[in-house]
Length: 309
Image (cartoon, rainbow, N blue to C red):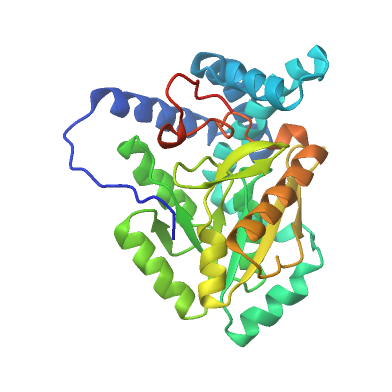
């Protein structure tokens, strides 16, 4: 596997990280007093209008769109600079409203050619890897499938802010269990889970320094091969799945696509990139355009060249 492992370091009290986490907890606590639909809308507004400008997210969105869609009208760029952070803020509020999120997920229609294959594999005890990206709300499809008898473990990357990470992982654990951290112990447990015929969910749309230079939106995007490598190693189905936010901003539809054929790791991961690209092109405001997806990892840079995609 080429997936990098996150080293665990013992650190003392971090006042800056603690303050950020305390502020986040206060905002979540205040939002909890609002009815769910209003809570989600307020969370989106706060993230879009207050947090995103300070965090530099709008600048990152503009840079990514300039690379990928250089002819996009300025009005649409401005819209996405507001709409993308709004969706991210809604994701956070929804995650910290687990009962309401699960209720919406249970009510969400689940369609797609891959559902029959998923059910058959699960019934037969064949391992399955469900793959998606930071699109729509990725916790919704986890909850929707879980409510239909397809329980999943989840692979996650520990947050840099350890105070935030503790309750964030706990919140995600209400949607999918067990949770495997991307470190030595977590990866070993994940492999045992697949070997026993389990279902694993993971997101594969962030830049990986040890990944291969595949294509995403026509540009080089370093992509980890581990999902495909595990599918080949354990004869697991590799299935793209998405939860698409609907026009009311609250409800979702879940799409389970056909399994990716087993070929080579590069071809399989390129198929996943192509699948996600097609979804994003249809819903440009629902992907997390704040990631440095097309940047060249340090280990691949040529001296004298920039890190841009």
